[in-house]
Image 1 (tube, rainbow, N blue to C red):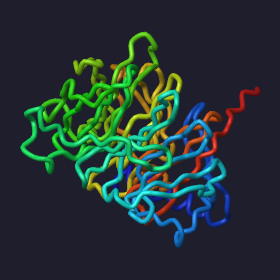
Image 2: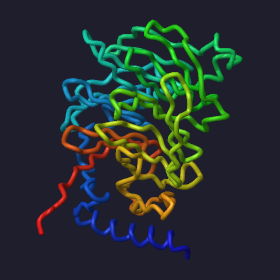
Image 3: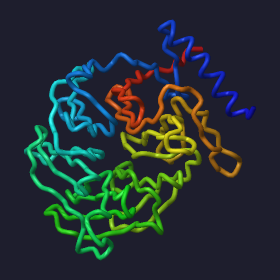
Image 4: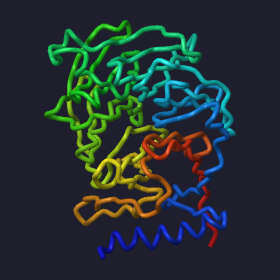
Length: 340
């Protein structure tokens, strides 16, 4: 038996016993350790069903908006206690990416629907404001069916960046009025450009963080589309990066193929883009040359985590894809004991 398989099986057996006796295991490393709370979500499957839970955002009121591709309610709105406060959307069979943007007078949502080949901008109540169709003028697409967007990011000036993660792996840049401004990336630079985020950790020089999931890499691009840096993360099939403070959080859908292997975990990077914690994954270790050892799942907390949302107290909310119609899980941050 391979050492990795042995570790996974023995760890899972131990966790199974702890869960049976309602003892929540602590997962993660260093300052980023968490207690699992599977009872956070109070949703009723009969009232608010989910298929795949995809992505989540906070609004100013502290409500959590989440996309699901169940067209009985594509958007679920939770309060911080996990109670569903609102549900809407019946026309988004490929509901996937979700980005919230504060426009000053109102907050708006950007929903990517890869099955309808478009991005839809809505109010927080679901009223459609604008749609962004396939970029016909770019010269990169034959027709709309090749465009399958998975995520968006908003630039400092309100420009929209769309990641075509299930299509041709381009990043499409629109100005704030919806006009095509640039297109970059593509299959020569990105493989499964599943996620994108505005990285403001250096406030004077914002950049874009883009997932190249099939390569197990994050890539940094300038706002003009120039590749600046590649961050190898072996074993991490990354969904989308989420920037909070000096750290980047992301769900690792799987740590080994096939895509339904059920081997996901969470990953946290510091301001230097080094892995500092991997809740439900192997301890991050770098060799003498600064290369990260391959990461893998060690505790069967998740099957296929798809997104992670961090609140102001450091707790994490985790949504999952292809995991038995489950609702989000709460990871409650455990403060490190510094007493001697």
